[in-house]
Length: 515
Image 1: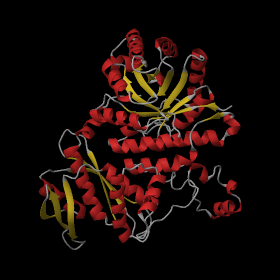
Image 2 (image 1 turned 45 degrees about the vertical axis):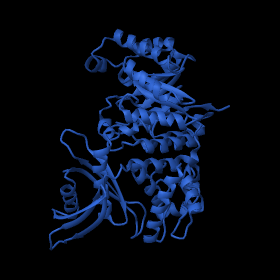
Image 3 (image 1 turned 180 degrees about the horizontal axis):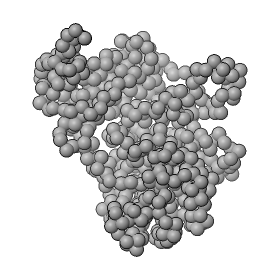
């Protein structure tokens, strides 16, 4: 029989803490459904006490996910645990994940608590969590820099209090693989069969996946990870790399396996990238666009003769088993609906109708609409705040010999308003004109533009990060159009609409946890 390692996916919690990766409730639900389809054992849906938005997202995910366990993070505080318990209450399978720091540096400078106080708080937290759920996970934050004797003491006590999973996070990505392996081996021998040992490795030194794999080889039977390696700072261990390493190197891992349906890895990666706006680097292992590409003549010759010459795994294994189906302006609603479903989206009839209308508009402008175009159409809609201000018209002028200017028409409360202005460049002119019409002045912090597909008629995706009020975090806006200038204007308006209507996004950066 297979020796199963549970996959604990924290894309919706730790992954969302990547700068610029905040997701609204509908986006989180779409990703959660795809994670369930992927075969993830535990979905950490958020941090219920962080904001009303996080609480609502966890609760709604708990209502729709039926196969995976739904989990909420909670500090070792009664108010956090109570919020987590209420948020996951509707779930068929539910877990509370509570934590407290255990390293000397964290206890002294962050918590300002003695080791004895930390143990007492941890035990109280686990006992209280057991009042809401049977499945309680306890994390020793910054375990990578904690003393082994203290780890054993606190682990022993929380297991007695009812914790069934003990997580050992390398919170700051400090450990090397052999160190992590030795730590897990000693703790596994100490814990025995009383609880599952889990690991949560950060990638500050680029070792998160290696540390996770060494931990598995030494007894860890749960691994915490994210899609595309998203996460704070340098990110978390990438789920796709861990899973495919186990699958590919059976000579090392033997009977060890996961419940992941690997054919859903690539679709899940694309969905997360489309929603967060954070694309994996081209040479990213497993899911990067170059992962199965060969440019060298020698490599091409070898692969054509026998794929195993330069490929250690099959592209088909991660869901690249066929070319993208291309739809066009003559495609019908049924074909579009089926393709949307295959891409991992679960839309209501109303959402599907709106998406189909946008598809038809795009299809009139492009010869072919690819899977990535469709992903972007849908995720752009899911990412959009209510359209308080809506772009109606845009006209630009100016070149190297002239003054860049823009004329913009915006609809607000059913009234169209038009103005024109100049700037240091075309984008600057557009944004300044929008500021004047809307009455809200923004400060651009980041601007990214990319082509969704190839070709001169490629759909342009623009992501902006804008600050509208001093002292407030930046908000993110997404824009999509064949015309890059139009996409830029839509992205800037998207950020403004988010600022005006989605206060929870402005609060989400202050979560203050470090597991």
